[in-house]
Image 1: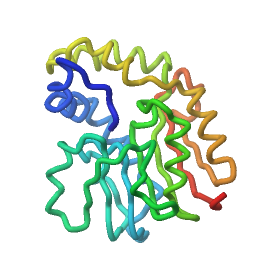
Image 2 (image 1 turned 180 degrees about the vertical axis):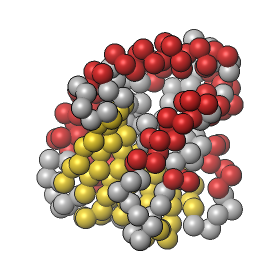
Image 3 (image 1 turned 90 degrees about the vertical axis):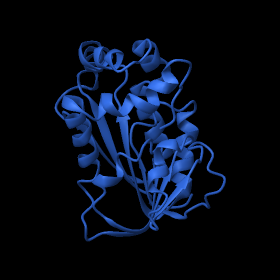
Image 4 (image 1 turned 180 degrees about the horizontal axis):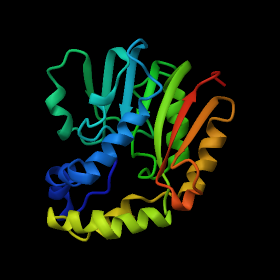
Amino acid sequence: MKKVIQGANSDWYQTGYRKCYYTGTLGIFYGYVHRIMENRYSKNLFFKNILEIGAGNGEHLKYVKCQYEKYILSDIETTGLERFRDNTNIEIQNWDCTDMIDVKSGSIDRLIATCLLVHVIDPFKALQEWRRVVAIDGNLTFYVALEPAFVLRLIRRLFIWPKSKKLGAHSPEILAYSEHRNHYPAMRAYIKEVFKNDRIKRVRYPFFLPWNFAFFEIYHVTKSNQD
């Protein structure tokens, strides 16, 4: 997960981030997010290779139901991924998700990104790069935070920031807003443009609410052509 980590927050990200977001009520919520990202992919599906970018500490991997020959975990900081080094089906890389020069065009069968797009400096370029590396008829699955939705800001103030402070985060509100740099209306416009010739399935949670009162969206994209 590409993050802005500075000063006192760098130690917190290595030790407190996982405890904050993957334990208790927040842990249940984020576990649900990972599960629904995989609800279109059964154990009967096989992909030769899967690339997960912004993989963080590898939290998503255990929720993947489909079969694969190789699963690539990539992040600009790979410390949290070292525990997977001994798995022969897993490859660890520290690729920049906006410029994966080591990845051939059309060489990836499925690409996964959890809470990443909201963090990157150039989301339009990132989306173009994600599409480039995926094969025709390949799949992309990615999470889009609905920033700066009212409900997200409320949840942070009531639950996430107090828990973060207890776990040693320094000024969690500054950390959150410096990292979640991209707003939803812009990200949606970029997605529509980059994948305009592809098949897109967009699901909002909860689906019946306007974006300013919802939590997130999951995009499932099937690449239609190489153009």
